[in-house]
Length: 72
Image (cartoon, rainbow, N blue to C red; front, top):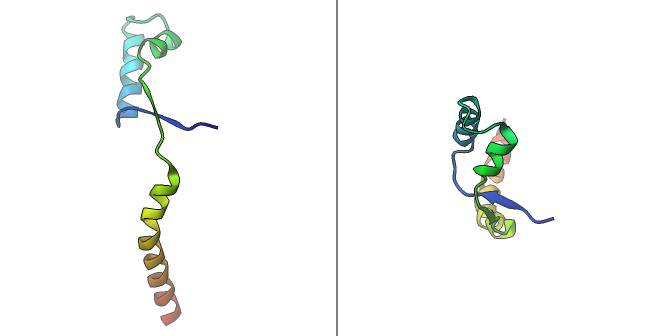
């Protein structure tokens, strides 16, 4: 299954703006507003590369927490 994401970071603000456009009568309904304002989809980056980058820090954090728990 392909994973896509929308461009931009402000999803909640976009949703509020779309609802305001419908409320103001610019669009006849939510479906029409969504179709008219649909952002471009971007392929999501491969998760494996991101996970590999986080693994050293995760491993260190787990080891530290285990050390602290075992000292109690």
